[in-house]
Length: 254
Image (cartoon, rainbow, N blue to C red; front, side, top):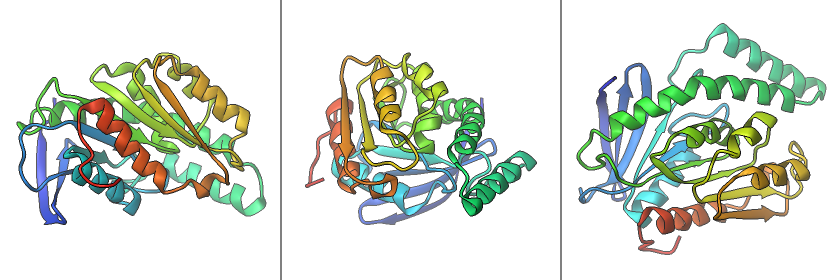
């Protein structure tokens, strides 16, 4: 078991940001600056070609910390952020670039690469959760959520399917046969967002993934527009979702 080592710390707008490593896995933990007692934890999976401190990750983290008093953690996926790229990463990225340039479908490449990353990420997320729960401000036995769209869904669904410590999850903007099969094993509350006019994911495929979740409590948010046009208020909705299911309370408009 790897221990967690903090490597940097800063504070802004009521949020403490701490960089950490678990073995060779780099991550960041956001927490309330008030130093409150033990609080729920939300894990966020970042999107493809992004990283743990991408503005979307930072924005979601600050919402969850300031509005709910939660701790929020993100780790760099293999081949992303501060992690070195392997020859496999470079081949897949080159294949994606060529597909974009020639107008060929990118979805088969994205699905193939994301399934590879999901396999690598699963033990890393579980090791990170083990280490985070050693912190007194998080502890064992407390509520844990997972939040991720696109690649964050591709890597998160397999994790939530096998990790009993995660008790609520928000996903979206993804579909594949492998993810559908894993979704059938998920029974915790789920919020799922999709774009009705997604140019990469057929509408029927997004609906099939939502239908596959075995949760008795699940909510579908279908918004008009293409994949990159998902409304910003979906992040606010996720905050309220986690507040309901992890025991927090939204303390300011979300």
